[in-house]
Image 1 (cartoon, rainbow, N blue to C red):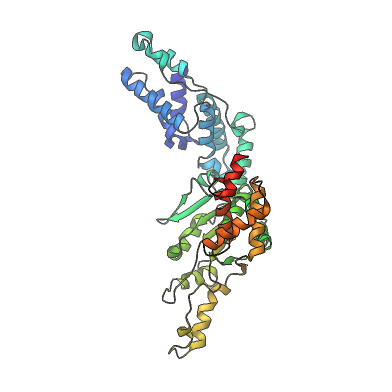
Image 2: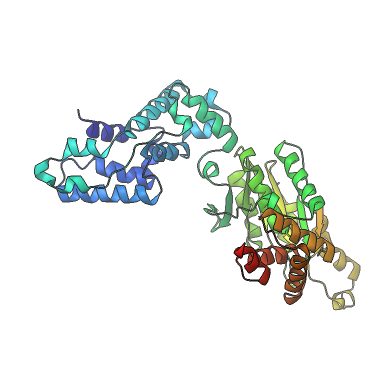
Length: 421
């Protein structure tokens, strides 16, 4: 039996890892491998489809990496058991099938363009076309699949830390249409890029670390002036601790009523989840705050131990309140006021991000300048930064980052001087 036909039969018989056949590149490879008896034009079309997809996904130099990575992120009986730490409970025939599939995927990944030409085509079929058909390199499998003798243990160890399926592949998600959808390109901001507010970020980070260690922790409200880095703090913490089993799911405020559906989907997953509600505030007429109150404390649907809620807001008390609300015609005015304030009280941890004064703002600017290697006169830098802030209505870390971005792009006088050096 030739190599190409053997590879097609191996793909056909995958069991535990059969899910990779639903992935784009493996499916295109399978169509190519099964093209032996098709007209040559159909075979060449399958060839072009496969090679094009392989190039598009960035695996032109490593078919093995592409296939084994697809297998690592597959959600199946073995990966789910490994993520839950229950591999020992699997039947021996399931483990044997997983080992067999790993060997098969490694063998399939060694198929070359020359193998297919030799096995399925002839000079008479192709003529000079054979020499110009797109090629690919087989490369090497990822580390968990490279050592076949120990691959099951290596793969199980990976899933125990990183989960399985999309939760192993992605770190950030959004709740949409009553389902959890991955964010392919999340914000990559790092803690080191955030200047100032070390005390506030340290409180949030300490709460998160304790959460990852299994300690009972508090839901957290990050509140304060706009542009002070509240949302960036949450995203930077995710990027720092995603390899320790932390994931984040952003939930729009208008979907809070679906919170029980969300936690049902993640309660049994052996990872830690932050449910992120950004820019949270309510009008007095907006009664959806009652849904959040129930989510935080008091509802029948309890928050599972692997979940925390982090919310950001420009308001300490979350609900917009007017003087007229205090002097209105409500017979139980104090009860109404307490109702409005009780929501923020249900966050066990509230962290205030206040607008920086001039000294703190300039400290953030110089810190960012050092971070990005901007070597200009400090006095000139501070004068330009202050002018930039005044033109934009106030100082903030966001304003500082925007100023540094204009300097790096050469859009200011000192930026142009920097570029000429």
